[in-house]
Amino acid sequence: MLQLAVLGSGRGSNFQAILSAIQRGELTGVSVKLVISNNSAAGILEIARTQGIPSLHISQKQFATEGAFVDAMLDVLRAHSVNFIVLAGYMKRLHPRLVASYKNRVINIHPALLPEFGGEGMYGIHVHRAVLAAGRPVSGATVHIVDEEYDRGPIVLQRRVTVAPDETPESLAAKVLAVEHGLYPEAIRLFAEGRVTVTERPIAVHT
Ligand code: GRF
Image (tube, rainbow, N blue to C red):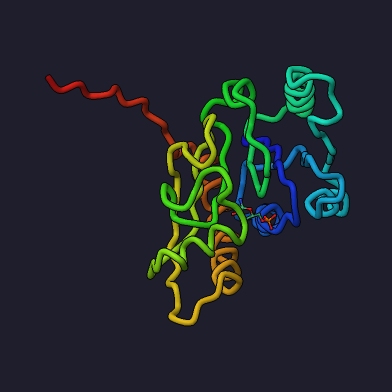
């Protein structure tokens, strides 16, 4: 059973897509236990409240130290029996202690085809501007496992969209978001069905 915490900072449309997939019966063995946002005004918290899902505003600013913040996050995740974390527009880097506690059990969705167009500063409309500036004929969405670096962990699923000749960053954003809403529930289903395995490959040393 996947018992999710969904972490987000903004409107929450991916969270809504995941909820809808659960409600349609497409994600058996998955339940959302908790929603956390660092932003008290985030739409994702409002969606959770409307749906009767426990939701919390937790921000590092509420704590004297980073360590106390991480402790509080871990306590709250454990108190809600969370065993899998879904980042859906969460704008903060996850502390290594959190990543280690949920090793290979944290995923993120990114609005481009990683490993290109990811990393610090590559979020929202900046991503789509960069794709167009580079003249790429395709873009897409990526679901990946989260490690200590932005947008870097192993890739789980990707889906492409075609970039139209008259594409704008805004039109590309809308196209990619529509793809995300199908891709994220699909990726979660792979985990729920136990079909994702992460293998640690030793680094080959050639002499
Ligand atoms: C999505 O585009 C996602 O790829 C990125 O943040 C955005 C979140 O949108 N990580 P929403 O809050 O799910 O609507």
